[in-house]
Amino acid sequence: MSAIANHDEQVGEPTEPMSAALIIADKADVHRSRVRNENYISFDIHDRVNFAVTESSLKVDKKKMMIDLELTIDTNISQVMEYFEIFLDRMIMCRTSAKILNCHFGLVINKTKLL
Image (cartoon, rainbow, N blue to C red):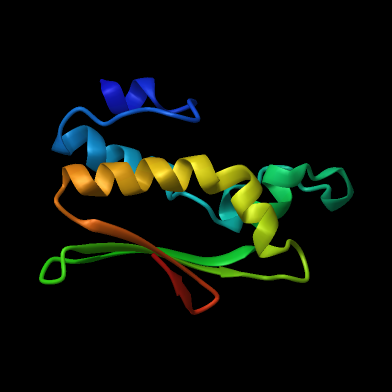
């Protein structure tokens, strides 16, 4: 329930492992397939950033206790800074959620790892 309650929120706290996993899955969901608007000229920042993400995967390394969100962002469409403008709070929630799972959360953008 807490993961669902935090879906549209910029801040939230996972209450247990299941909500933590759901928050990570929800907040890490960024990819061009999410863009429903077909008119590129009318894209807002969310459409532009999502459309710029050509590859997105969430990788879990049980041995290292690491959860990585790996993204490829086409910087001809949107700059990486725009990603952070709209997703920074969500990535902080992912990091908090990973801690509930006794893991670390990492972000890899265009093959550059951020911890």
